[in-house]
Length: 601
Image (cartoon, rainbow, N blue to C red):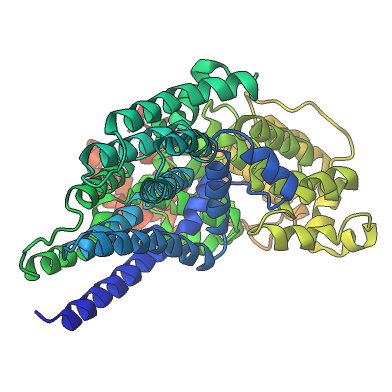
């Protein structure tokens, strides 16, 4: 095979690999979702940068957080990520192709690129670990340069100490371990090292052991010696093992570079070309097999709820997700904002009953931010702020939380408080635009009132304070409903009533539909009234001027007749009624509700 043709194939494989990498990270994974899930706060600020990098692994941590923040910008974050992966691979390719005369240079460099792409398919990915590997690797190359350039063993030994310190400061304890592995392999297998291997080896190991101790004692008194050694190894608890594959590849490359230096390896060019094809194919196949599709769907639903893309959320949702409380909660929010909760409540099976409307009494930390969001929507800003502060305590300064607190302070006219949060968000890349837009409202009451969202919330603020209750969140709505006339509050209160089978309370609140200017009663409300009339044998009930529709009368007759036909077989009735009535309140009462098993035929 001619060298020119080999080069053409190498270029082709590289371009295909980059294209597949872009497709994987932008479409299959969507790093924007990873950004939303992780909520990094990367402040592009000199003082913050100096504060971060002066601690061990600070530079890697800062760079990783900054990269994660860029994922919030469509396309740009993916392009920069792939550029870094490609840069890493190109450096390795140049190094291998110049030192080792073997056609496997393309295979090794493409393998690093491929595994990096696959590593970043995990929504828990720690991007800082990528920079730990990158910085450690670059410093190993710097060390190799000194091995070849410096002629005095004493000078080399003295120079190794600041190099090890540099590794520890930029890449932390994990970086020290990786540097040790790569350097020690290089020393042991090298056939061209001009110095005593035992001397260089012993000093490298000595420096690796003493550096954390010396720095913790002299410069970081708050960091204990054990903590100095553990350092960023704690990151490994939540990081995927594929990072280890990349480390193994680098160690293997180091071995080949030093053990085969200057030698030609006589292999058919078709073999590495075939392996390259497999590696490029792995960039697509690996993520396809590894991506947690259920995790992605959950993140997507939360992302769409956060951005108020309710129609898109409902298209992504499926009935089985209604078994998961937080997801069911977000689906119900979407049902309200796409036509009314009372009208659409049973378009999805309410397996959890009223627990899918509110999340307060759940001990899972995932409920904090969604609970703040629902109360913000309702105009119950004191309680929204409470849950946002709870989130801040648990998760730290996540942009999503800072935005919510900034908005609440703007509505309340507490502009100094809002400035604090907006000031932080202005120093980021992906949230700067939002922060600048919100800054226009500071100290400008007239401008705030011109904003439809803010002016609506100002009108919903309760005139009198009352104590919120966590065990029984519906009582918060009862109090809110006394102090404001909010359609959302009322619908959630009535939905809670329906889900707990309390149709009598619904009947008592029929007048509220007229107060809130409903043109007609929602279908599920009509169905509940039908149940009340059947249970009480009432021929008529107060309807506040409304009347039951002809559609209701026809469906009620058909449902009742079908149900009575299967009095001896609940399963038979369920199968028959599921075809036409699965989205009705009647079907919920009999077959879906958590209390349905306690109902007799």
